[in-house]
Length: 149
Image (cartoon, rainbow, N blue to C red):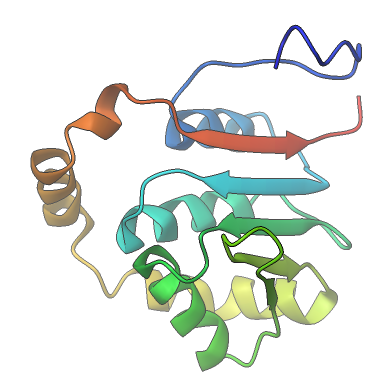
């Protein structure tokens, strides 16, 4: 990709998705578009979704790859539980979930997401994830962040 994309507004970063999203949150970055395509594990995606929600503003879009895979189950459960609309497509055979950030979405995430998120024992889940998915510790996961420079 680095050979083909020559825009001065594009920066290539090699890091775990979770680590880089955490870095962007610490810098108070705001993204126009976030495309999550990492581990096919529902709790891992929920953690990334939580970070992504801290990086968006009105009009931003969060896209999660492989919508039909089990990895989107918890994000979808949350969105449905608080009546946040989302869309999905199957143009390429790999369904994608899209969430457009609106005032309603921001209000709901700020008031209800932590309660949903904190239902899980994250320390235990993180240990289980590392034990069952060691390849993700060193594998490339993808996050595309659209940020105006």
